[in-house]
Image (cartoon, rainbow, N blue to C red; front, side, top):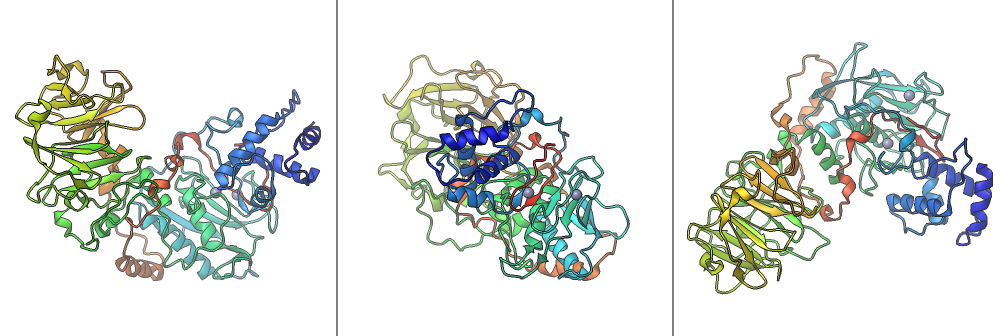
Length: 580
Ligand code: ZN
Ligand code: ZN
């Protein structure tokens, strides 16, 4: 039946006439294996529809960064033959294979922060890499992750270790046999309660290399960084720059200097939070979005490093103002320098380090130590800042002439405002002060009749808000102290489950942020540990150097509840279909 469907598809496919039946079969097999296409039903023998095949090929091309032609063209076949991990690329909810999967364990990250590791079996005697080299490469591949997240890895000598590393071959009794040189080359298991959780297996039949040209063997460090990413809970992404891309990408350079791509940093921060040392040694924000020609006019003096004591803590309550500007989120907090943090449309923090308001929006008085509320005006997309009895209107980065002006222009009371936002439901501007709110029509330049009203009409919203903002999900968000409340669509009522902590959901603050590394009690591998300290002290983290943030797709926030046990096979040219 499968052969029949291949022949049928071949006859239907005019765009790739040179395809052989073997190529076609390989393509369909590949699509099934990596979650793009359900395998032919063995009971009913139901055929793949042409639509399903075209859709599957397009999805594969999209994830792989190819043109979405929907046919198995040359480029697509080349990518399919690229060594890669055999874990499906699509999350369970996206995959047509989801119904065939078992119930998955709920835990997808480690609850502890100190993880032990051990190389249980080393590469065979004849191998190119010696034991010390392999140990050092494992050490540095783990350090890549612990440098930026509050995780600590320590090597242990006994039989117990969270992360057991094996160089093994063929069938090694975990149900996922290796297949000799060139086939499946490594796999890892997600965090969890299982005995195998966190374990990483490398195929002993591969020609593992280090500092070798791309064409020779498999770079052990690069594969190890990828596998340890899985071992701490990360899934695949399609980001070209990511180490968690499913395709083998060759060597990644000097293990002592390697730094994770920003995409991977953000994903591990979303799981575990940010390591303290990263926050404290971060450079000032010099990043900006690249897909939107807005607010790009950055201050000239970018290199000034502000003393840490002047910088407010993004993880502590509260924020003066929160606004959505050109689709991005801005969190304002006054403290000496008057700062803001910026998040992309995908709610992806541009930098851990705040930027200074005055350097970004030129024209606000330098004596201004905070702002009350900010919103983007719906009729002309100008940005309006409120402070006390005054407001300023900005066109992109520059203040308009004639400002500040009194907020009585809006018909607002003389005590200032707590919050201002545009309700997506009706495009009207809402102002909150104390326990009252006003509705303003920015198109007609006038306050609507019948206001102010009691803010209790917004059920569940607290009085004396810090600010509110619309967001691209169609909901409105209200902020006060360390918490926020969400109001969906046209509801005037807070959604169930709120308030939620602002820091965790918006600003990459995690509960474990204060979990400082404990001294090493094992005393193992002092040589490596010494190197670790030295290189750590000399590190100069560049967490704000991303420039591709605005191009980061939505899968940067993967749903980790969808996958439990990870079985990751690097395969060449085609993987076995592993159905968990
Ligand atoms: Zn993988
Ligand atoms: Zn295994």
